[in-house]
Length: 84
Image 1 (cartoon, rainbow, N blue to C red):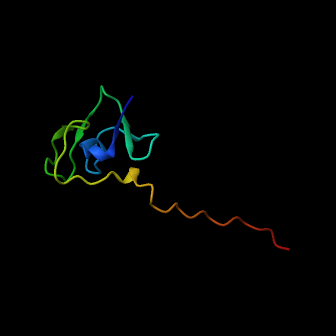
Image 2 (cartoon, rainbow, N blue to C red):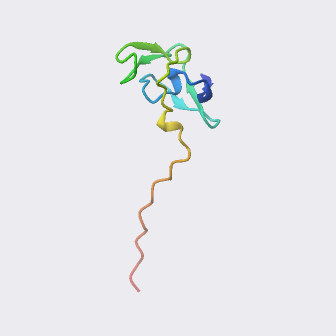
């Protein structure tokens, strides 16, 4: 398993890239399989074409939503409390 920083702004960390990946252990990093690093561009300038995630970049990069750690955590449902 390899890792790459989102600071590089490659397809791998772009929300428009459809390849296999997971958020990395370190903030703003992406883990991926070096032997399976291709995925389709979705709604970007290379829409529909297969792109190598760790090597390609474009001017329309959008940070992968799974890397956004500033998003608020989902609210949890209140616990049922027994009636007195």
